[in-house]
Each structure stands twice: as C-alpha cells, then as structure tokens.
Image (cartoon, rainbow, N blue to C red):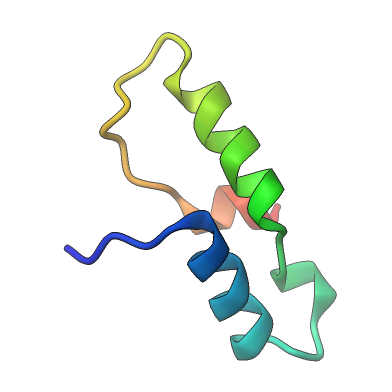
Length: 54
C-alpha cells in the first residue's frame, strides 16, 4: 500500500478532476478528517476518499 500525504491527495484530486470542484478537497480538510477519525478510533484506518468528497 502506498502512503500519500494529505497534500499529495489534494493535489492528485485537483489534477484528476480539474473541472469538477465537487471532487476536490483541501489538505486542511483531509487533516481535519483524519484528526476526527483518530479520536476514539484506530489511527491505522485507511482514508475513504468518498467520505471526504461528500
């Protein structure tokens, strides 16, 4: 499994969906989501990108 930073994920989404802002998310949003997920749950859970976008 390749591990990406929130900055890399945000950049990939922007490059992959340049004309669709609904499929883009900032690295701050990803960090915030990871922080919320880590409170009370395992820190080793993978990121569900669909949850970030909707």
